[in-house]
Image 1 (cartoon, rainbow, N blue to C red):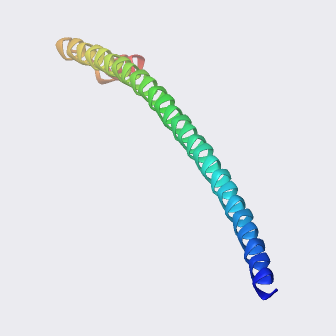
Image 2 (image 1 turned 135 degrees about the horizontal axis):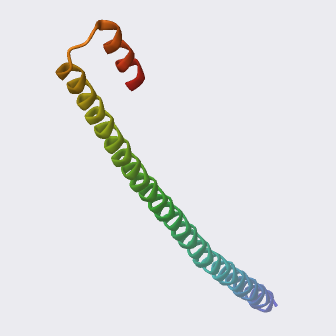
Length: 110
């Protein structure tokens, strides 16, 4: 009688243990699958960030190239203006004239 009760109790313990093990395995499978999908989302997020950085870098390079072109245009304009002023001053130096005429000519140049 006691042996039957002990065997019955051990049988219940065995079934409860098997159920707990099955639940544990099920939980581990769920966690593992979520971990993989979480890693996949994380990788996709990092790829999007890298693409955004690359696009921003390309835009920045375009802006830098535009600024270099503007710089060259401005330098060319400055050189042309300086040359024009130097030529005008040399013309004024070569012609002796009164101060007021020189002043008027310089005023017209500037």
